[in-house]
Image (cartoon, rainbow, N blue to C red; front, side, top):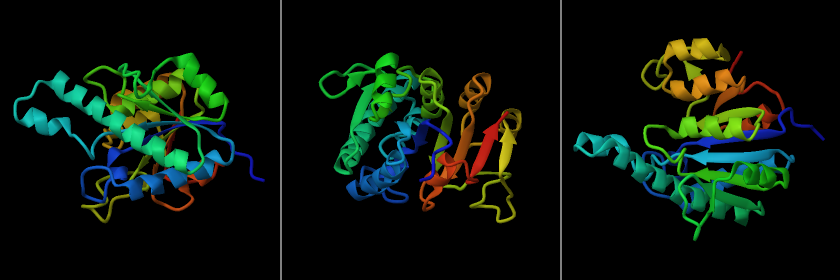
Length: 238
């Protein structure tokens, strides 16, 4: 049996992963596909925390374009992440994985409030913890929420699971000559001003010496390779 290199990981997933490509809403079949990928590494006794975005349900930038207040637009986005968290929790439970949803904004009828030590205890017991509602504050992205939860829970690795297989020198969808990086330092990633992860999240990881891997969620076996210490995507570290 292969022993994972990382015992505890936080995985940031885009909300778009729950919808059809280019679509909106929550597609239960896509949620099941994501859940199967998470369940595969959970079976290796890896402690897993998840943070999911809300791009499939709400994009604050659209509200801002119509004059919406930034704080209110972000609050709508935070609530949308809770909807995604519940959908993913349900899909994971149907895969036989015990989950807990914790939210930074209290809504006790449907989820636990975020309590750091309780979250750590859930992880130690093998439960997948899904952190909803971002940081609970406007002006912070779910990337930053993922970095914060990873630091708070003592995670060994932060995985940014997206639709591209790493960090590129340019947009690979527009520039076929764009070069993919296998490894970057934190400062290199910050200086590149990559759109894969925001600078606040990278800085938080750098200050806490928390490594990051950016990979394509949909590449078969990608998550397994990463947690076993094999090359996949782009590694960002010291």
